Image (cartoon, rainbow, N blue to C red):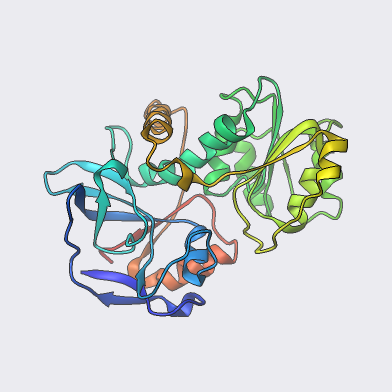
Length: 316
């Protein structure tokens, strides 16, 4: 089978399309013929070995796939690695059926990014009715879903950040009440202005660096900033005294801690699938790259030139 493998960690140039033996499923595992593999910003960290989990080479990248099992079931699955390939093996407990009315690309958008958006609100931020929400990178894979879920989950005002006017317009079309350029000099002031002059209650943050600092300073008393990514590669430090003086909270979220707990995966995913099948939630599907174009895909991801869910087609 064709697959994307790395033999050393590094930049996009380490990604190689190679021929490998088809994987053999073990006990409690299932073999999936991959129709689409999902790509996430975390894959660039995996490629560099700068992710929260550590890996060894040689390594086939990719943590999510959609396709068919040998008995013909349409499924989507989370896997530790091995998704950038024509075939992948997944543990049965991490395999979920794709319902009618949801295509493979939509299912992939909902599996990791949709579940992340769901848990950011429900599990980590514990959004209360009427609270304001800032969604950093509101046109991205997680962000575009978080923007759409904001009002249905009870948000009073949803504010997105996005780096271009085109992306800001997309965020507004998906339900954001306002959209802000994160590059503005006074980002804290811009977020408060976008919230009609009020400090904000919740920030869903995946950038790090100056964006994290400015967004955290825009929080109202009892406000929460939920960190679920560090796209800038710039980590932040937090002073406990400042948290106490402002009655603010910083919460971290990593979807991997939900794995093995089907109540944290199965029920939220079913909710997301149902909303999508009814047309209430519209996963934004970005470009579908050929397997042979995987280097360009990673360059686009890391260069922040993408929006929506990025897919890899292993047949090309």
